[in-house]
Length: 235
Image 1 (cartoon, rainbow, N blue to C red):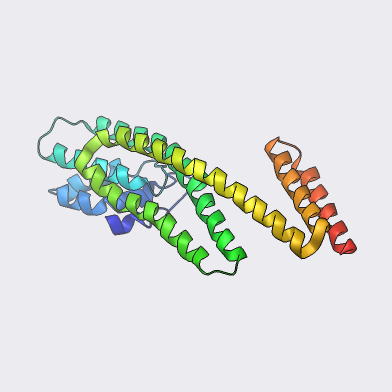
Image 2: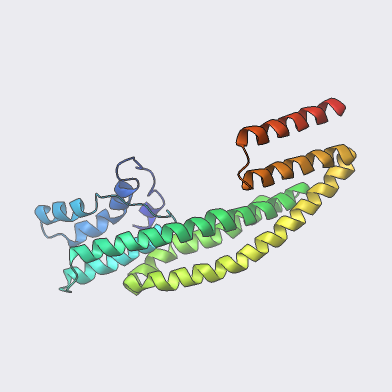
């Protein structure tokens, strides 16, 4: 099941999104729990519905549902509606938390540090990126399933608290590293191309700030294009 979690998005579609991929993850469990083909068909139909969660943190949900299904099979009073509700709630919470943590903070932080190494022709950049990203990635993808199985449905509260704490620390690191990277880019641009190249970089930064202020994408791209063309002609 852990191996299948790496391919949860391979069957993404417009109707169930990652529903088929999540069913594929749980299929070995459902086969173990079912006493007959009819029961397997019933369990399978329960998991053919819509599913959308951060693919890395989906392992926690798979672990929690494994915990609930095993307890239900052992005679626990756990209605199918409760399992569906837990799946839906965790999916919503972990999608927001996971996308913010991995895509907004972790990946940009690791890439920025990697780019700083690359500026000085060091191969440590990609090595650092792969190590730093996969430390969190594999911890969540592999360790998350085990944590979900052991902790059950209460794992969601502990996980979101931990992600919030780590996101706060990594967010501060990302702000610091971004400032260092911007300063290095400016100084190296000045040394290689003088004020003209540095000026073009300032225009590019201004364009990015313009996009954040919801300026027109068309005019922002046009300004950057004209600034680039002017720079090339002067150069």
